[in-house]
Image (cartoon, rainbow, N blue to C red; front, side, top):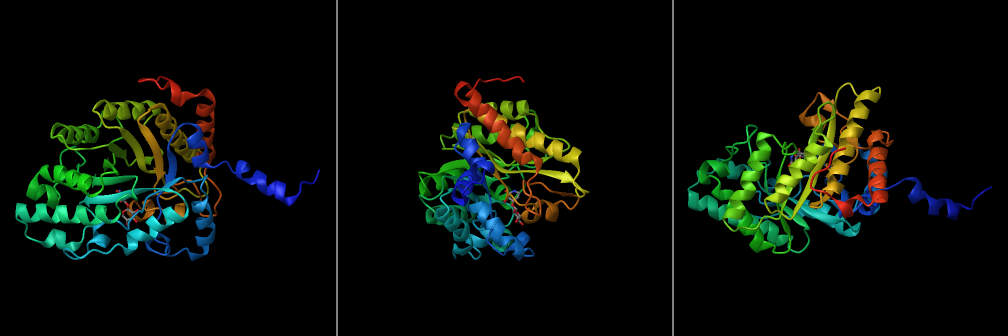
Length: 364
Ligand code: XIL
């Protein structure tokens, strides 16, 4: 039987199984992908990919949320003291609006990609307090009402779980964290305020203990913190189990944060990744599925954000040269096995009504 083209086109969305569509069926608020300014940084060498990339990104059933991977960082938003520039950040904020996606905003106070003046100034505590307040008020104030959530403080912990010795910590100690959250709450009362970090996805990790300490620090001071963002830059060959994710998220929720999100998910594979290595891709698939399932099983988990979705645009090979293929679309735009794995997980959990009967502990 020959079907008319219009019928075939109508069937297409189902045939390609979109991520946000199935995440929502399973009970999440969104499944999203971070993106960057077209033509910039990692993506600059691949102009031939832009039209296919843009079409996938724009599909509202594929991605219901986005985050700018760079444009809202201090380096771009306040390059000189008190001089604000929102041009870069507006690119992805504009894409979110034009493609109907929830916007997560990233990141107000972070030691990396800082404007150079922040690190070269000889600060008195009062002057740095004022600079943090001005930055947060300026940036969160500019996007007021448009950010579903803000990563207010990013990566305040060192690898050993103690506070990272950033310029902020060295001058102000943990007070800078309180200041940043207070200023963000004043600047954008409607945005969910998150602490965001990597390596905080396993229950026994020293960094998870550090993240809990930060939540308590704020709660004890009566300062609003709404969420913990687990960046989840994972490794295919040694990834957290589903139960690890569940236990970690339950521990954050038990401290009184309303929500938790996977904010920068990618699962790196050690090179060589081509020719396509089935074993490594199977580990990666399992890792992505554990994240998807855990998020559905923990009521406080609102959604999952990939740190971009197309391998050539990933930050991983640039920063960790022995790793790659961390996302869900290969360079030739075929999908990783993990893509169907995530969809299958959402479909199964949606059919079982898992979200509605979430238990505090789950054993497979
Ligand atoms: C990365 C960007 O993706 C890169 O383009 C940039 O060169 C470096 O930063 N944790 C974070 C993100 O919170 O902001 C980082 O993003 C990746 C690690």
